Image 1: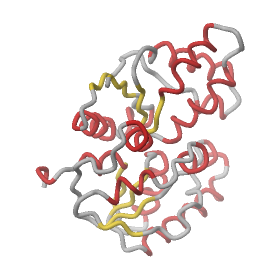
Image 2 (image 1 turned 135 degrees about the vertical axis):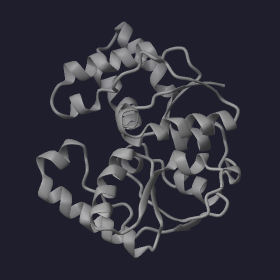
Image 3 (image 1 turned 90 degrees about the vertical axis):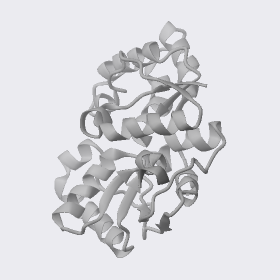
Length: 243
């Protein structure tokens, strides 16, 4: 299967290890992974801040760049939700853009959804001997409705002890520009999330969105909790040989 990686802005700029881990994981599972060099932003932050025309141009560019692949994998529930939920609304009816959206968007998958639903695997051959708790981010939980797919993948990782996160479905308070426009509320929400994370006794907090991990990780770091944050792709890419 020919799979294109959409790495996303946050990962490309701040968490390149997530992109590398995604490629390692997909190749291990037999996928032919390509990285279209023309990719830019999905347009989410433009649309969310009131610039639909600019967001629409980026959406049109995305559908041009990623046309023709068997699947497009996105290691971010937030960006995958933007593409799958909003692109059809940005494309005027009966246009070439709308045709390209109809062709490309159904092939776009968040990483865990692609592994479980498209490849049909939960055991990806990973080894990660640590105590881990999982935070289901808002877009993956409420937008994409990934359900327990990430958890099913983590449960099959050898050596990993998965512990439940109290109030897991509560937002961490990031929400992109929400954290900028409402810093006090955002910080209070994140403090609640950090308190629940530390209560698990986990060594590692895992999620499918680095934006949320960045937000929670900042609080965990300032509190000197010692809890690390890791994207789901990085845990699933880990193997016993890498010990």
